Image (cartoon, rainbow, N blue to C red; front, side, top):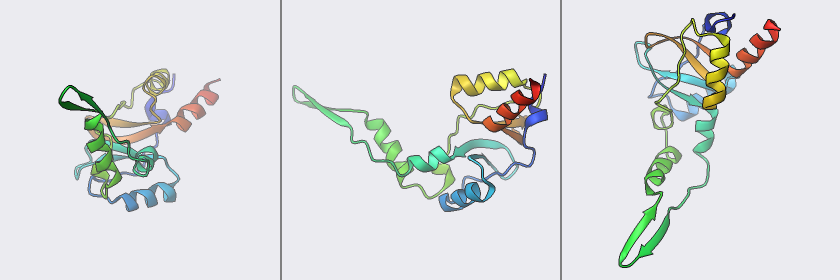
Length: 150
């Protein structure tokens, strides 16, 4: 059974929270990748940012629904609006990256990787040793590994 260490890309392109959104876009295009881990100065994983995070910057702003009940006004979905505005005006990776990141280790099996990707609808999984990024597995890596195994 193949493991993450067998299919991961070890030479991982990473960014820091201070990387600009423009620099991120250039990196994704230049390296023909769909996302990158966000790391601190020591290489510790602190988030992940993908093409989807960039694309969501340019979506339409959803204005919350306001309901009047007696003499009170109730905003539905107002917490998301602040988050959406922050992403739309983002200039740094820190403003658009996902901070709750699913990760795997070098010993994670191919079937477990496929399960995580499928169940969590994730296309990139950082491979970590402790909290240090040592590789990354993308959906193309999984598909390639599956075809090699059969």
